[in-house]
Length: 263
Image 1 (tube, one colour):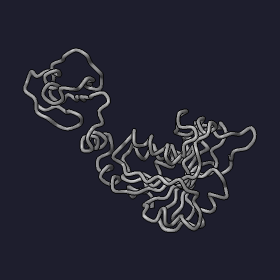
Image 2 (image 1 turned 90 degrees about the vertical axis):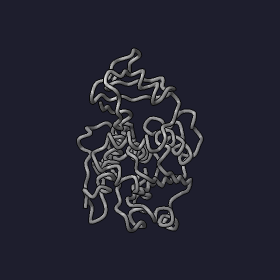
Image 3 (image 1 turned 90 degrees about the horizontal axis):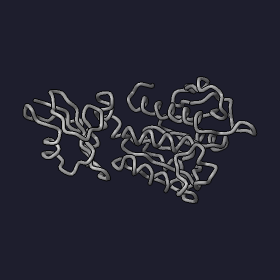
Image 4 (image 1 turned 135 degrees about the horizontal axis):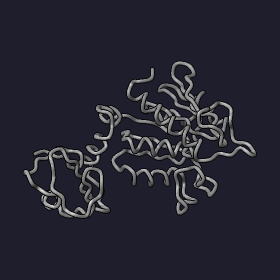
């Protein structure tokens, strides 16, 4: 009979058990998942069962991780995005969350750039940890992304992005993400970068309704996520919920562009 082992089809004998499968396929596995539930006792396998054998602390080989990720995507998605390159300018609340989302779905190459360092005030919304305070955001984020998906290619640059270096940094991207905090930086990128579609953001401060955050197309090659109004100000700070909504809407828009569903 046939079952799914770590998202690939394998044959087992009728009456075979979970422990027998572990001993045959992955003797070191210390976490056994049967049909979505972790189990500690042996069970008899049935046709079509799903089994995951996990060894704590082990990084799956690239082909196995790809198979696991592919199985959770809509068919054909992974094959398209694993060859794509996405640039992210700014690695704060938006950029760090966008990078995490794109790493998790398996975009093949991420080019990351920010000159800043991790500060305590960043931790209320950005994808860093207390023990990374003082590190450059480029270095810290690459470390975190490597732990999420080591098979994505990361290029992290600790550099201030200017009109003079933006094309050199991001010349090979399929989609460009604007994730700056300041309006002047946003304007600089929109004026200086040419070529690939741009996914920008404006207006996600405070704790108002997330339903006001939307996607607007601005011309042929630019999209803006946010409410276009609510900027950071006294009494209206930047916090994880609304920033996270905007960041994930940006990441989803990048995915749609890569899949040819926006155009």
